[in-house]
Length: 459
Image 1 (tube, rainbow, N blue to C red):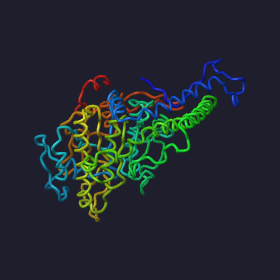
Image 2: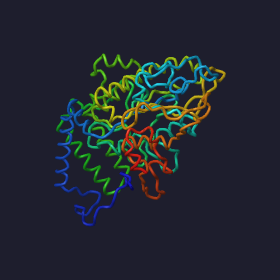
Image 3: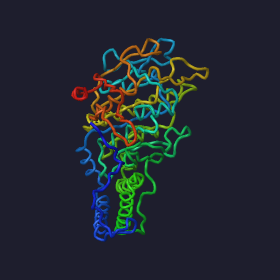
Image 4: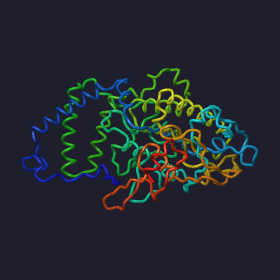
């Protein structure tokens, strides 16, 4: 199967242009009026579309969705999914039994211990990148850079494959407590969607849990706003078509997105949700953004990535920091997964919780754990993933993987297969070699998939 990038335009058929001969100044009056009418109708339809029941009903008709809880900075596997109690590498925390016989996780995660039958835990990730920027790029895009090719983020691919571009609700949302970029600039603005085009990049929000500056000024009527938008859209589209400009296409896509955001802004206002729900998730930004992710997915978004600054990078006072961070993650995962299940959404919503690598089995001089990509853990649930599975294992001290090794490619192949996306689809990019969604035919891990049909089709 071969896909063509959406931002590569094709030439119009001969004789298809309708103008008086000048490509720069001709404006066909009938086409303009048609465009104006369409623009006005479109704006009017957006302004009247927003209602929670309508969007919820629309969301239920869609295919699978995904929430990525991005644990930026990289949590320790020893204090989460792969404890080594009573060993030199364990630290001060013990392990507790879960509702899966014989399976133990950190004592800092008592709530997740009660829903392990819904979770799939991978204890055998082994990747290459040991620095944050490289690790984040690798584990959010699925592979190393191959310049000049820019691989899209996981969220961009899922939005392109499963999303609805005509929905006013953004299909890829990045929720970050520091929307302008944290001090490490881990999520500074960049080429998020790669060659897929700006329409598949994320809408970035956070901070006060709302999107600022998207309300129509009171002195601008809805009709005037629609007319202005129709005029802008007409000339922009004409420029895009005449110049064969992918950049102009991305520019137009950004305007379309803003128009949709104006209609669905209430979805980003958490004050409209019941106070009891907000308290249940917890008062921190990460917890509130997780609740917001559930709300957005429930009402039409396809992929929501919840980042949390850089708190997991505990080179200093590892145990004290994890003693605060892990219980919050434990509660957030528990609330999110049980909420999705209660609402009948878990089977269609994949939840992923991971960072860019793990932490060292040893402690440094500052009582912290350093970066360690050689053997680490993550968890998934719902959305085509089989619950009650613990895949892979590390040695008794957690230095290396001894069973079921997975790298970033096999992880992404598994995620794509769970969502019903072909991991091995080819992309033909102008002037570049053929690329695949997942390179080198890396196979999904069958043990982690709820259905084996995807594996059989891929094989």
